[in-house]
Length: 542
Image: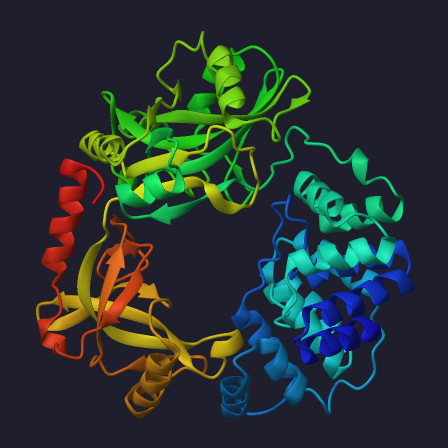
C-alpha cells in the first residue's frame, strides 16, 4: 500500500496527462494482476465497482472522530488544519505524522477490509474497523485510505486516464478497454480481461446496468436547426426518473442513473413480464394520471421509501415511457442507429396494452418552426421540454455528445440570502464556495436549498474573505454566517422536504448572479415559494 500511496503522490505532482498515464501504467505492470485490479478501482476514486450498489456508509463525521482520537489533539487544531487543506485525507496525514509511522497494509488487505466493512450493520463496528485499519498504516498511507473511502483521490486522475494506463500496461487498444469497462461496469474486471488478452469477451449482460446516454442542452429552435440542418426526431422531455429496465424470462429489474436498483415501482413489473423476449430498455418513469404528467414533486413522494405504503401507487400512479432499446434476445443494439432501435422497439411494444408501459411518441422536425411548435406542444402537455435526436446515432453510454439534445423551459428564479457556507474541494480548497441559502418567513430566514455553481473564481475569493469576517458560528468545515449576501438562484422546480426548516427544497439550484443591489430584507418570501410550488401542481413543471 505504501507503493500505491507513493504512486498517487507522483501522479498528483505532475500536470502532464501522458506522464500521469505512464506512471500508472508502469505501476500496473509491476504488480500482480490481482493487486493491479484493486488498485485500478481505487485510482478511479471508487471503493466498489460501478455496477455494484454497495456503500461503506462511513461519513466525514466518523472519519473526523477517529482521526481526532488517534491524534489526541484539540479539536480546534483539527479545524485549523482542515481549513488549510479542505480535505480529510490531507488533514489526517499532517496530524497523524507522529502517531502512525509504520505501514503493515497492502492494497489487497485494504480491498478485503473495505469489503468486510460494507457488510457490517452496526456503525460502531464500522468505526472500530476503520480505526484498526488506520492504525495499521503510516500517515501517508492513512491519507490515501481516507481519500479512497471518501471517493476522491484528488490527484488529477480521471477514469479515462486509468483506462489509457491499462491499454499501455498490457499493450491493447484503448477503444477496446473503454468498451469493456462500459459493458462490465468494473474497471478491475476490465484490467483482468486486458491482462488476459480477452477484452472481446466483455458483453452487455442482463442485470448488469450500463451508463446512460446523455444529452447536451440548448435553448432555442435556431440551435436545433444548426445542430441538425437535415432534421431530427423529437420527443417530449418528461420530468421523471430515468430508468434502465432489464428483463429475462419473468424477472424484471429497474436501475437508476447511478446504476442502483430502483425498487419503488413494483406495479410496472407485471406489465413488462408479459412482453415477449429478454431485453434492456431505456426510458423515464413519470407520475401520470388521466393521460397527463404530474409534477415531479408528486413522484418525489414515492422515492427513497424502503417500505412504501400500498396506497401510494394509487395516489401517485406512474407510467414508464420507453424511448430506446439496447439489447434484445442476445442481440446487442448499442452500435445500431437509433432509427433501427426505434423500429425494433415499436415491434416489441406493439402488443403492450397497459398505459403503465408506453412507447414515447416521436415525430420528425426539420425547420425552426417545426422545433418551436413541438417544444410549445410538449409544454402544453405538462412536460418539461423537448428531446431532439439524430436518427443515425448509435447508443453511446455515459456520453454527452451532439447526437442527443435537450431543450427545457427556462428556469424560474428566486432572490435568496446566504445563511451558511462550506469549504470547497480541489481547486476551491480553502475557499468558502458551497452556499446554503434562505428566503424570508416573517421576521426570520428559513433555508430552501444549497448551491455551489454559477459564480466566478474572483467572486468566490471575495465572498470567502467576506464570510470569514461575518461568521456567526465556526463548525470547522462549515460556518453559519450573518445573512447579508443576496443571490439570485435558478432551479427546475420546488419539492417538499424535511431537510430544511422551510419545508421546501429547490431542485437543481444554480447561482445566476450576485445581487449587490438588494438588501437581505428584500429577498423572496416563503409565500412566494409556496405559490410556485402550487402552480407546479396546477399547471405542470415550471
